[in-house]
Image (tube, rainbow, N blue to C red):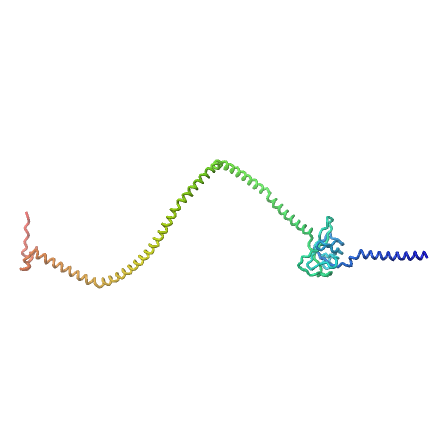
Length: 328
């Protein structure tokens, strides 16, 4: 009976131990039943990332990396399979990036959602459902460091060209020129020092002169007002003169027109009356000469008016001509 009881006890212990092992296995593997699979696609290096690395969504750990391998269709792509908690809010706008974990050099996966595509991304392993992996922070720093090194190299070359022997000679000459200029400026400053000492007195005289000029300007105020009034009167006289000049201009034009008319009338009179008047004047002149001769003869021979005109004295070569007696 004892052996049978011991056998039953051993059997029960074995059964209970098996149930405990199964329950422990289920306890340690219970998370795998609540996980879904997503595939990340990376064109960049994933150094430092290992299987079982943490996967975090906006800083909260939601899963682990299951496997890392190359894509069979495109060897340039690296496929990272991750297991995350079911119901994790992964959308079509979610992107992945590798982050450093402490100082060990290991990396983890960071998932970020920019909110541009809020549609839920169902878990799948096909190519259309892959999540793109962006360049890691270390890669960006490395690239930036390379750019910085290139710029530093360029600056070093420029500094080397700047400090070449010809440029150094020019720089030494420029420094010598600056030194000579500074010495000349110092001499000029010493020469100007007496004048600078007299500047306060000159400034006082200038203030007095300005005050006098201000007073003169105030005195000139009434004169300027009178000059303004005189200019206004001159302007008024100028306008009146202009109006009168316009009137005289119109009168002159009228006189010119009348002169033209009188010249035309005079021309007509001259062409018709002048010949007759000339003939009358010639006849009057001829009669005047005849009357003068008659009056001269009557003055010399008044008896001729009764007895008629006496014959004229014979001239030289005519009969009865006698030479006149000469006075002794």
